[in-house]
Length: 249
Length: 293
Image: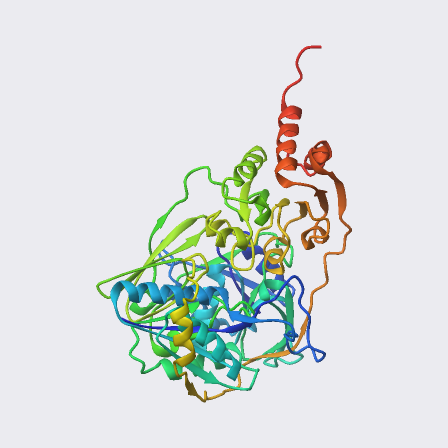
């Protein structure tokens, strides 16, 4: 089977987010970048499915030239080929992103298109669904388990502590959530291969989407001061008093 | 008029309250003949939009709300703003709206304009108080086979008596400081005494100390208990966005400078194993009926 997995380059944020002076982006001067977490699991899932069923894997991203780094990370994990929809523009909204991805995926002959359920940064919750719609494919979101047999994907997702089971015929679009697997670390041979593999670069067709970012802002912090109830086990009686005041004990 | 999708669960009443701040609301639920199918929800939204020409369609940013709205947006070829915390209609009908929406699970906000003849948006959890219950029209859309192609075939229910993270009144969360999978035994004990559930940070689910289903954070559950007890959790923003819906937070951490403490209402500085064990003892002692004189 042929699996394409769509990923996104996002900064690795720490305990605090700082914005650029124009409030258009996160200040990434001191930050590294990574594959958005749900999508890293999508890469791992693609590898596992192809290890089991045979076939090929391709990683696809839309982003700046530097997003080649995340494609190389995916190759280092084991993905065979990579496509970069290279753009210097930053105003790709979910509609525009999905349209550009659908264009390059349309005639790819893939049996399965994997996405992350939502990107860590913009969190639009829709690119995979829009691509599925554009390509006329069935789509399941929020998936935490995939089994494939005889051209049908049996998938499961969590809902209210239980599981919902779906079956979709391939080709299909499935967006996954972290927890579906634990992504592997890149191997040394994988890293070497990642350096050598040529990334296919495509200029995506931009269309103006209807959700336009104006500026970013950091939300107001929790205002109230913390009340220190004590130090070490000696604090227990005061803790229990508070639990009783709150009506939980 | 604002259409509002109502599904089971408290988040929908938050979406209703959000919609009410924008105009008169017509609430609807989708009747998919006893199952759930995202295509049926999308068909319902598309047909209701056609029938009512609303100014906007609003749904909770629950998993199902996001999914239904994404499908509807794709079918209608309209933009969709997910996880909004506020919205301001344009002066004239059809003009773009100003919205503020969450990025990074809510650790960052984005001011944006949302255009389109009908505005589609989902409402971030726990940013408005839920509305009082409203009349809800159960709508059965006309369906094609394709609408039902993806649907729930069956459900696997959790074991009876399970307190789910998102419903628990008390959540006891553990981070790297718990030290091991076994270390969660104490947290389980405390959660059981308080009738609550146990959660963990992304670190502990990535280390395999807890199942991923127990993760509190941006890539896990967003919880809103009366009390969240954060044990040995440093407080990365990805964790904070998962627990900031808690009414009160108690942090137990040996590092008085851990960011988690600054985001808490109460703190105990000390080794979590000692502190939690002492709290368990104290709860048992004070719960025991008085005996003797």
